[in-house]
Amino acid sequence: MTPKELLYLEDSLGMEQQLHVKCTDYSSKIQNPALKNMCSQLAQQHKTHFTNLMNHLS
Image (cartoon, rainbow, N blue to C red; front, side):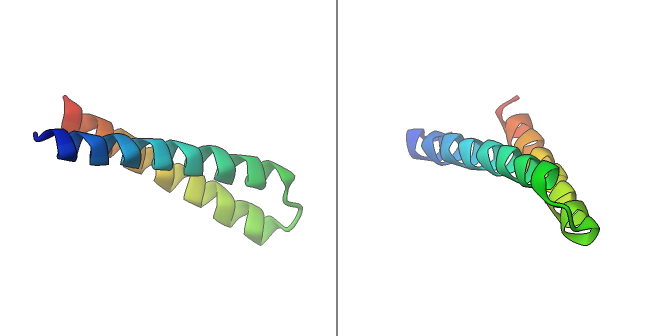
């Protein structure tokens, strides 16, 4: 991988991690069950994206 690709991957990992944390936080604060569920699903998707990106480093 080129240095530029590694920087892109690093940025992507940080973004996915941040989005996971934010969606998890929002999910814990939202009262509406449909929105709460949607935020939980989004948090899980971002966690999966993070894991997939980490696997590219292995």
